[in-house]
Image 1 (cartoon, rainbow, N blue to C red):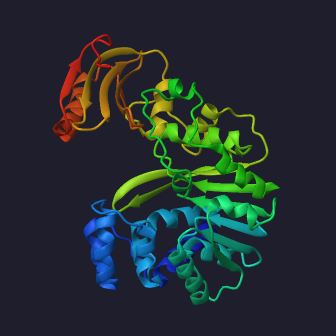
Image 2: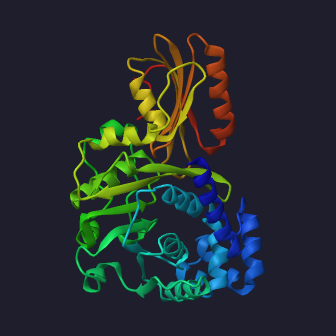
Image 3: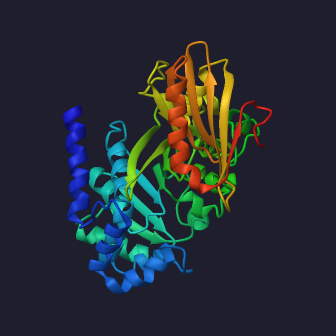
Length: 393
């Protein structure tokens, strides 16, 4: 199985390489690469991507197939990780696949190559994207993939109900649903009690209607923290789609040198017995069981679940940092249990990091806190507090 997965990973890498897509680790590398492909379009695209000028990013980047593939270098590692994850799902035997938001056809064409007996349909609102996708399919010699320009809300007018057994979306629904409120919370447990949702469930009800009764909806959306994943689970459930936590997973990748982690969610019409919080904990710790011992460190959602599972704690000291001209606030706190010291670094936007130290290792704990202050203290004013009553709201 290891060899098989390794070969599949090599195939994905070869696919990107054959299309001239480069793995860029810095913004300077990225802009140098796209400039070499088309300097004129780069000058038009750069101020839009950097939000210095309004414009339709997709219409510009998909002006030509060559330039579109060059711009893919920004998200290359993300898409490689996603395709590698899909390749490892040996149970997938789709007959008809719908990709929502297919853009330039890069992913749809890969699905057409690994599922040669399936029909692949890609839909996209951007006309330039559809033209690039069609050109790419011809370039790859594929005859089992087709592309259609349409608004997502019109999709049921073009395709029959229950007609796709695999529907895929990748960083799509935050654009389809419109502006998505950013999660502002300190405690996931408290935040999820309000049953927040990612957006209007009517959009995902369309997916429900298009999906066969035993079909799969596979999504890898822009879920930036644990709360966003909880909101996504809730809106899926409102639409009659239920996350299969055992089948879902996470992917690690870098985006222009920044390390990231994203959940890959598998949902079906079949209900699950796990409630959202338990399902999230299962997903974040699957394959990486929580181990409570000296020297362990956890990040992201795993850090918060680890912190909760460590049970009763006594507060020792803390620092709060308010980022200037922003709503972001960070807390760096030292807690004690009967076995450990905990350095817990977290924010009101979902950032979490936990270091487990030996009991009484106060010198090491203060060193970690001072390092964090040295690294981030320039972002805004710091407030020290020695009791929870003193902690700023």
